[in-house]
Image (cartoon, rainbow, N blue to C red):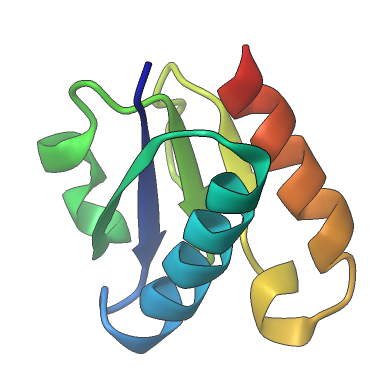
Length: 93
């Protein structure tokens, strides 16, 4: 089964690309089929249908009804492995 991960940041360009690539690589290594979708945090409502998880470097103003992971560790490097493991655990469910 293929999982869909929505990666959002302020502009949906550089930051979300770095995060999406890291998640995609980890999923491939773990044998998890995944589709990555990138968007601005304000566009989440437009892309959320069918998503299994949101990873964002911005703050969400409302509960989207699916798991949300804070993606800041992908940019700082601090806690990145722990966050990747949380993501993989959610996608394995």
